[in-house]
Image 1: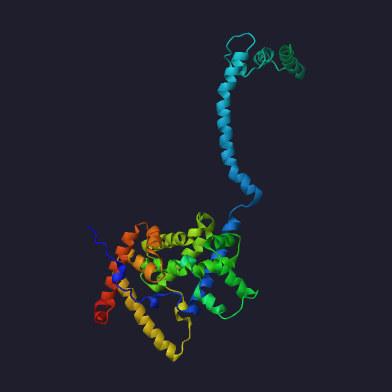
Image 2: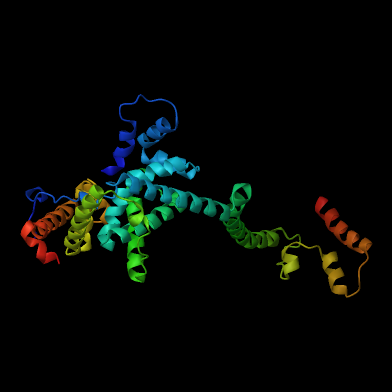
Length: 134
Length: 213
């Protein structure tokens, strides 16, 4: 068990010879050298660290990208599920392009092997838009 | 605790004078500011605010450094580097109203690193810069001898006893502040102070001179 000593029972020794502030001239020089070096170090650190609007953008870019990735990851299964439910024929879409709602004429164009003209592509999408607007 | 004390030299410089606007008056106003305000001003680039922080807390930093390093010269080197590092990382000080504790932690870590590397640069030429008169020389020699005896006596204590006795008896910290700074209880701080004082008195009494050699 530790005895509850009272330090005031023993008077303190005189530690003033160790006091760094006892010699005022010497202490002034020490303090000035610390302030000079400290402020110089601060300036160097500030220059090395990007400041202003770009620094704020850089600071927020990683969390924003992470949040966007989470949103996209959560949205893909939901989009897939909703695309299947909205399919006009009621059939389950199997190909990835079908899952994302690409119209059949467009798929036919991609599978045909021949190079479609711009008019073919417009016509293929147009059929889908006409279908949707009905 | 020293965090709330005004550096006496600055007050003496202004002693007996009315407060006028000017560099000295501004400095006096700055030394009155609390630590949190001085930290904020230093972060904004005000060198005078950092100067006030250094003057206010140098003794605490020195007490911790001396507790680890054992000699005045090494303690001053550690203090210099730790305070420069503190200036550099001032934005990391999350509780600026407790700047003294934060600074002492930096000093402690730096002193441990220096001891581990064992590459302490010897004191700068400051020690030898002053051209002293004959009276000063005699007084300096006496002070120097006292300092050597004190350092030798302190060397016989444990590092934690040294830190407690120096913070308490050299810089006037309370046991609560010491306990918070070194991560112990106020009761243990009292214990350390009791044993440290007892041992120092035994070693520094007139007849004990030979024991320290």
